[in-house]
Length: 378
Image (cartoon, rainbow, N blue to C red; front, side, top):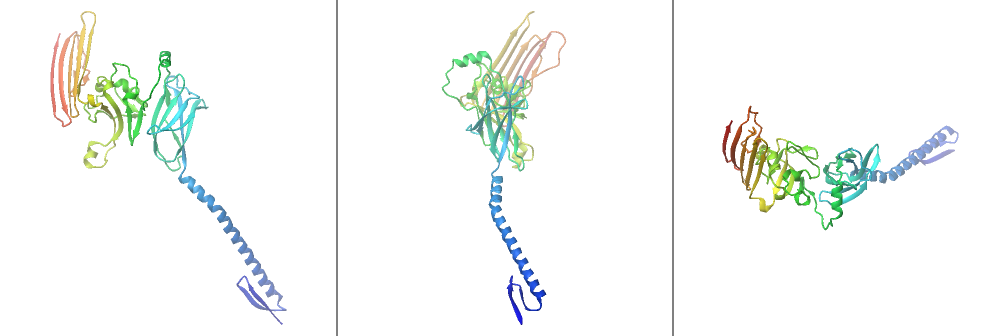
């Protein structure tokens, strides 16, 4: 008698005699194993189908991720944290995005914003009762694996009691935007700042958010040194910032731009070969783009001591004429340089009377004329 075993798992098919029980048992074991492997494969396929949406969702979140922006608000004089200060996050065009309050953390006043993971220009404004508002403008850059970015400290100046009393009597009807971003250019609106009458350009620059003006005329914007201070895009003063800072009236300024400028060599070649210059450009109002500015200094003292100085500037979009005069009997012998700037001279023994006159004409076309007359008498 012959027993016929059919297709078990599609591979086991044989004829087994009735008395050959060993062959029948082996074929049955093979079929059981094949069935178990089929179930395992089905279970694995089911797990993959369940996990695939989760993996796809995780990848989507990673592509559209976010970064954390952290910062501190402190008293500019005491350098202590100002807990509860209001911090406003704005876009480059001063559109409000979010507002938050600082909270105490490890002895400091900390704030936190969550931003989209992309390169962007932002403005931070901090406010607290009894303090003047503080501003910081910065560019947030997005890098892979970098989830935390730290903003420069927001230093708030204490408002004195006299200012508080005057503010109580003022009715505010409108406000002007102090700064905006135009691409990579930071633009300050000069008319948005309250400058005391009689102030010069240095008084305006000291009030610009994020700007520091040192006694030697060096200017820092968000901690970065300004390489050139220009007037209507032209470097008339050749690095002598104090000459323009101390003699250009603030009311003649329309706005102040801060940007990176390619060097003359890079502009000539058509591509950047040197590090770009960091420039602060003072743009004059139309009615003052061509005009005349003068500044005089007169002083007297005991024992018939006296001093008189005169500064004059006539400027256009293409030229600048400066005139300096200095006369005194107090041993002040500093002489103007080729760009009209005052230079400190070596001291002279004894009491002398010093008189000098200097005129300088400079053009953007490199045409230069200079006249200098000086006389010293004992």
